[in-house]
Figure 1 (spheres, rainbow over the protein chains, first blue to last red):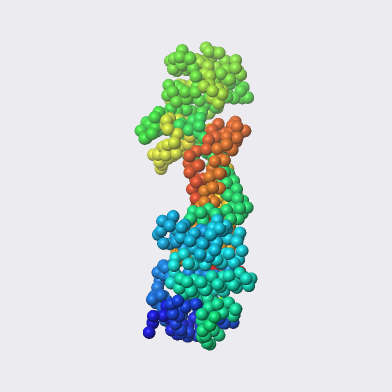
Figure 2: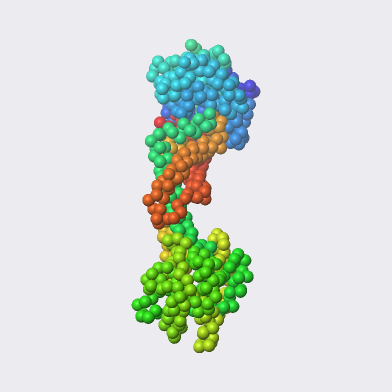
Length: 231
Length: 384
Ligand SMILES: Nc1ncnc2c1ncn2[C@@H]1O[C@H](COP(=O)(O)OP(=O)(O)O)[C@@H](O)[C@H]1O
Ligand SMILES: [Mg+2]
């Protein structure tokens, strides 16, 4: 079967809260094809972020098989998993998570430090990425000097810079006004359309989800439906 | 970029970092000054005669040592010369006329106590006359003694009347030299004792040992005392200065107290700095988690935290060390009369660097460990 980019089989995840065991994902299975732009929807606490974190390799399932970009990532040790993330995953967070002491350009350049690349090439690439998100003129600004929408665009440039297999975005517009949110969503659409990036986006906002090509619904740790979006 | 991250992070909370640095600078400065005071203390104590040891009976000064010890001590490694002295304790005319009198071995004694100055003629005359004596200039002034006078002392420790002819009046090399003593031939005392009380002959009050190198004082003192351990007359050897002032016992507790204070100062700044680092790192939990999510290793995060802590420690400590020299110079100016020597030693500077480094390392230890261990998802959740 699997030429799927992401393949989940019977993924179970529980959290421990003191003595209590909280089931979050109760045996989730699905595939995501390369080139998809998928929105993960569901009410708050339904396990969307947990699922996304598993796919992005920053958390581990209790059981089940999790293959992403050809790697059974549940079997990797911490160091290999970190390398794997650096190669395969671009992150977009709700609160941007830029380094406050670095300029926009430096923030974008940051992941390239892991790439053993000459400094000039790093800077050049970072400039290109900033240009792609329309912020070439803000390269030297600190994050605090940028609006939320601009910060998120810097974050997108940072997610793109290593040319990852997969981009994960957890509520990327959750902290933005409608207009900035639309800018960000259109930018993500372009990444998907024009350079074929696979994007998985968690959101509880159906208008945001409408920008994706497919929507998956999660309810109480189980998939409750999958639909295609026709623009 | 790594360095940029470290330094910009360090100065992110400018006031907090500055206060920590000032605290560290003050602590390192205080430590340096206190260490210098301690060194100065010891320098003052044995600067004059640290190269001279006094060996006495370990029970008490009133108990003598056998004359046979002289050759044994002379054999000990590091001993350059040895002489001896006996407290005489006589009275001149009336009991209120008291001054220190010592029976000495003239040639060796005057060689070792080179601060006692005689003319060549006086010296020759003194050495020649077995019943001769010399008196200090101050003593001579007090009693109107002149060269050639005969003085009679009534012995208290050694009863009877003892006659001496003054063969010289010694002066001091500098203001610190004691010029109020009377010195005469130990041979004269000993020969007389042999006749009158043979049991008290051939005994010495103290030996004075010239060791040349004051740095070896402790080691050689120990060697001497070990030599006579478990003998009839065990010895106690200490530096001339310490002996004369009873210095060590009285000052040791002060030195210990000062040293303790200097450690307390370091400990306090360690607590302050550790708190700063803990606070700083906790606030950045999400940032460190983000770095790890991007693929940076826990080691990278540890490096950032240690780097920041060490940068603060280096700057604060560096300022403190740099400030030590002018402040010590100021101290020396105002306290010069108490401390003849007040220099910041390289050992002190080395210790200051070491403490600053340790404060930086220890402060980073727990925050770095925590930041490295925290799970990415937990770290990211600590936002907003
Ligand atoms: N690190 C964690 N420790 C304990 N409980 C957690 C943790 N992460 C998530 N949870 C719990 O798991 C459930 C699902 O969380 P999450 O995946 O963040 O939901 P969503 O993103 O859909 O709002 C919630 O009940 C949440 O409280
Ligand atoms: Mg969520």
